[in-house]
Image 1 (tube, each protein chain N blue to C red):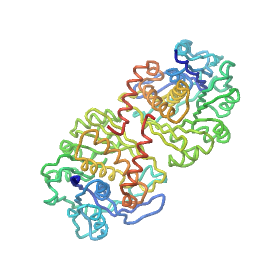
Image 2: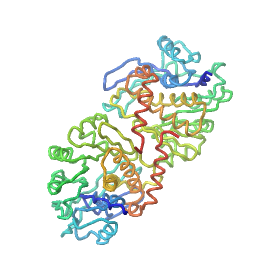
Image 3: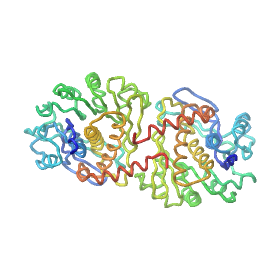
Length: 307
Length: 307
């Protein structure tokens, strides 16, 4: 008897060619964007279905590479113009970054169109895009069972009413601790989590970078540390690969109970740790099952409280 | 057969009457200082022996309270003058603080004299005092088996050569992540830890506040989360109660292997979490075995990666 193949994860988000000023050097036109990082991470566990937009300048071989990993890119529109670009400079310790330039380009008119064959997908990851676009995606889905969404300070501040409508319709919100505090208008993480869960999502995942992640679910709190890296090159996309791995793991498990989500978080922090070890998607592209398994074992060993 | 009583922990550090400006209000002459917080935490697990200095203004009943908890205060000198005072203001979110005033008072001439009866103690906690004083303490001890020390940015910057001599003579350094980075002159926590361990201490404990703590020991890394608090009133002394609980646990266990230290860290982050729930030592004073046990269970449940 063969194992049933995992259900696919529909991923909607940005696709980008970023210019990165990193302590290790300056890099131009680095392939990135939330949908790209998430889809690469998801594909370690389950098939991904990608919806996004790129310009003619986006390398065809990147799309081919994604397809070779089990990512269905039929939802990626290639249109006239240039791909979205974020240009940023990271601090010497990688602890903070500043945006030097944002060129929306073809992303400015992005209106996600979910291909017919994707509309029945049960697992959905709404990357960090305008909450109105996140709602547009949901309106095209037939019966999503587990919808997770990311967002950012920009939408929390500028599009709160629309974002609140998104929150009412999702199962799981995945944000970082600063976004949580801003959304809840409350500094204490635990009280902030309670406030955000009252806004709609049944589960809340809080990303804390090098400190790991928290899951708030059914009145329980689960804590997962991050793998302590010796080599940190580029944090870009770590949060997106975290979310992608989380959804991929859940889709593969075919279950969404707390215990499964907790295991998904362990896998998600581990995949994100690889992401930081390379510039852009370089290191993430190298990850395979054995590497992941070895690091998961290390993470479990260091996080065991007894023994 | 009765269990042998635990070995005592010798604790040397500051004793203070602090003025605290907290989000919850302003508090004058709050009993504090590293030796006080540490001894209170130690006494939850093992007898403490306290060495410090106070002025005539230090409340006698505080010393009596410590004695009632199993703290031997015979090493506390009461001298003419006023007790050391730190005056500080915490940010609204308690995430940062500024020093408004430091009055060394009787602490300016502190020269720790270890009472004869304390000199054979095997477990020693050198609180955050001038490294030259830490060396003076060690020179008075006969055969310390497990010496742990704390320090701070001020000594790392201004007294590095003396501090390095301390590091050569201790078993365990207990500092926060910023101090680690400063001491190692290296931002990456893992590489910084390797550099500091090469300076002498056999084990390194890194405090990360609300994010928990890391233990670097024998080439292994152990990670312990902090209990996520719903009520945070005053972080003053959290690090000192963490260190005191760690030493108390180790002394009670009578063993210093990695597994024991890891369990000690779990107890230490838990005791420190209580400290933050009250102003000064108020909440720490209320902690008893059942409270501690209940929170330890909660912490273990939320930190379990599987299940």
